[in-house]
Image (cartoon, rainbow, N blue to C red; front, side):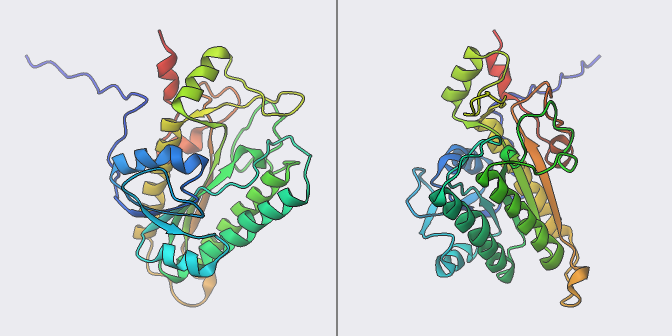
Length: 295
């Protein structure tokens, strides 16, 4: 009698091939998050173009130099791509920070306000209707006992960074509603390299880390591979949504068939503080890298 084979064990570094390989523009791809995830996106089969003010460290990617506030550079970067990832971050702050100054205010509004709006407008003009926006758990006030759901937890941050990232989510929602775009916002928390993740998790097995405030609000860090898998799942989801939507009628705009979703991405494998149900349902994501901590 034939024996039934056991299901494949899914490890923390398993990267499945993309369901819909895309030509992906990684906006801000030379920065912190972009550098983490680029090798994983390539491994999944996506063809990458990076737009940034400085060249990327990765090899095998096309590079377009420019700022997100320069419409000519944005237009060049968008030409010929299928979708985009917005991984631009300026002067990030924790979700309990009230300190701010003029440079922080100007930098965050310039990028998270004007730059994002410009990118979305020019993208839909060129027929790029799918994209993933990097938001942050810092859109929320971080001293709360539980995050019950993405739509139930208010955008009540005291930080200017979180405030403008929340505005960015509203801008995505606007373009989904009025311009038929298919967009996801990933509210990420504590992105770390593999070495950083292992060091911090082993030093603090309770999985809580100070976010820089005096009171030490808990933060659940995310390993680079887990982070990349969240972006890969989101790319597949928005690409499927855009491909399946009927052609949008030119008028009236209220009949546009777009969609926007915000999703928690936190290295909280026990869901002690975060309800990760939407991440599982919409992009098939849950943390895996904690498996590396087992004896």
